[in-house]
Length: 113
Image 1 (tube, rainbow, N blue to C red):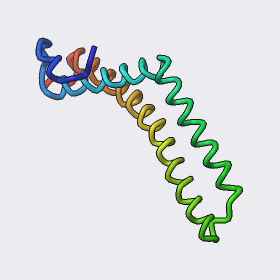
Image 2: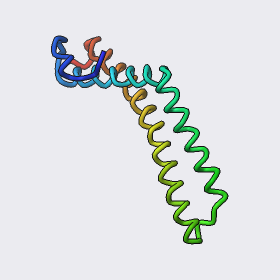
Image 3: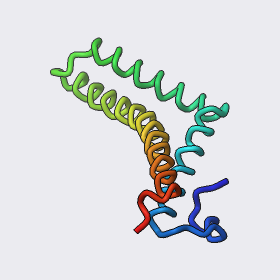
Image 4: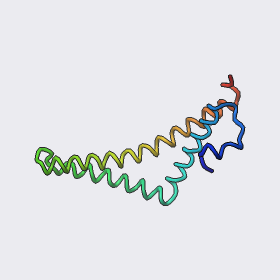
């Protein structure tokens, strides 16, 4: 199932907030499923590997030389990219779980307006 809002048109929601919670919960589920699949495990593993290699290499360079400064900048950028990929995946899952909890609250009638 996709979190594409156009595919949610057949579901009746109480309001737009409930629709948003549902879509966000679905994104979290999709990301979790992606990370449990072969491609997701590979990409997450590569990101973790790149991050760790960048950190290790940063200790071996002198950032005060022209070559070292250039290498340090590249390593920081690469580590940042890898770290953010992992963070964005984790954020999507966490936010999806929070949205699912909010959706349950809506469905229990505690937040109807």
